Image (cartoon, rainbow, N blue to C red):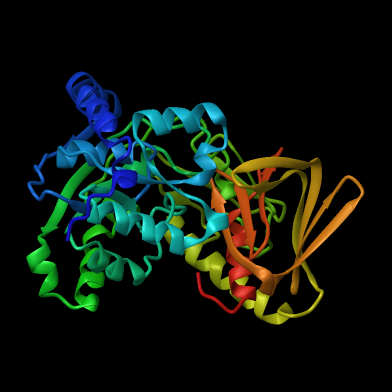
Length: 397
């Protein structure tokens, strides 16, 4: 089903030109610089929706090289805050920007409208780059999205990107990245599949555990200070199980209790004080600790944790308003609190519609009426707030 929709096609011809130009002159040099290894597989279907895992800022480029086709990518709104980047992305790539304050239904409709107008779409269905190296939660709604788009589905799997450029890291690593098109499902094939079949295919096709891949086929990822800022994702000490007590330097992570561990060139962590050596399993352990803690304080005014030196913004219609550049944030069993200047704003946990971490450690809080973006002047985890708030709401992580 194809509709002639001029709004959906706006900017596509220009973007296709720039894609072709970049592929011709930058494709080979970029693969050499990024050490990207892949086997291209031309996607012949006229219109498709590409779904992939996400770990590296260069993933959209890898996806274009894999398919040999133009796609309109779905982009998070936090990447377009600055006017220069907003105009640059719009001019070169004409992306679909996911505006959190408008909700996912608006994004869903925009994707369907584009596909039905003959514009192919690229989407990283985890909703952001992997925090821990394992493909994250994928909503079952993506299967219905494929059905409603009425076009082909292309699934891609990208490996090595997490270890080359961990979302939390200060320094990128030298090491390889690998990409492959796992499957191309034609519209006719999708019409013969149930929604459950489509969903299971997406999940299995794009799943990656960076550490299990390393155990099977190890590669070195070398960097200066490879542990630096790992406390952005590693927020629970595996020895004392306290939250927010870890700090990093060089190749080591330490806790006030005396715990320490060091990381190697393969991304693994080593310490006699913990039974695991990778961030995926460390993350599962810390989520279990957080879940147990939140269950004891849910619905009460008990303090869980907080951070100072916070830069707090309110957002409206894509524009940021600075509320405080040296504020504080606090999480309690029943509320999330922001303190800035002489103001104290408390948001009931049940009123938070969406909580997420953007870039390395920006915390995004969305209610039915308000949207806040919280940066930090010092290294701290935004992920711990996302995980704790979801558990306080009775949700899983």
